Length: 257
Image 1 (tube, rainbow, N blue to C red):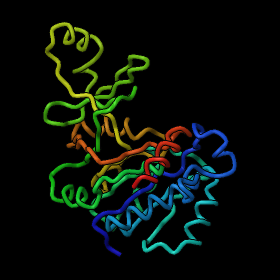
Image 2 (image 1 turned 90 degrees about the horizontal axis):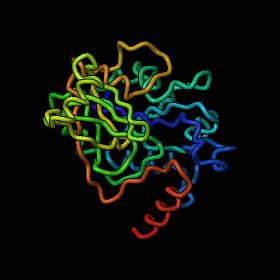
Image 3 (image 1 turned 45 degrees about the vertical axis):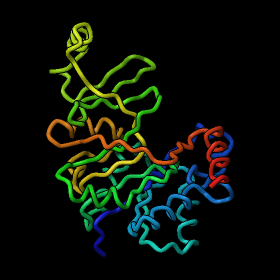
């Protein structure tokens, strides 16, 4: 079946930040107002007209497989099985790349993100663009920031907690260059927070080795020769449900809708 856009839901994580909530279940099946996070995610994607979904699994992966089989969602859902080896955010995408072959583009959606971003419209805009990937970004406080030029091209990553940087071209922009530039005010970049949502051309990751690796590291490599662009979003709501207090905040907000 041909679909313009396949969605990959990243659901393989250990969910350690949720503590006791993930001791007997995967993060994807932690309930939010009585409904598993994965169900919230799938139903929102279907409402945005996405009907081909790939879900990667590792931690209590069989529970996710059983959940998908028991629920008759209006979508073609495939499993990318990482139960033998957790592949991390980038390795999981590389491993699943063969499942994208009938689509033009891919949307990656972390299972612990809920928002009202108009993903259907953004998918259509990305299809019509000349870009290789869109990283959906926000102006919010976080210790880890993506760095972009004024033309929105990805050039680096910054961990504000330990002061470390990673650069697309470290031989051009490295620690010594950065220190000189900060002193003179000549190196300009925009810091943006990653939203856990991104679009890319379906074959973009095809040349990478299948192994555990970070998607940020892969994007920094790809940005040497590809258009990896920041797309700012300002939805009415966006929640990262990685911690119990964030889950509670989302539950209370959704009750007001």
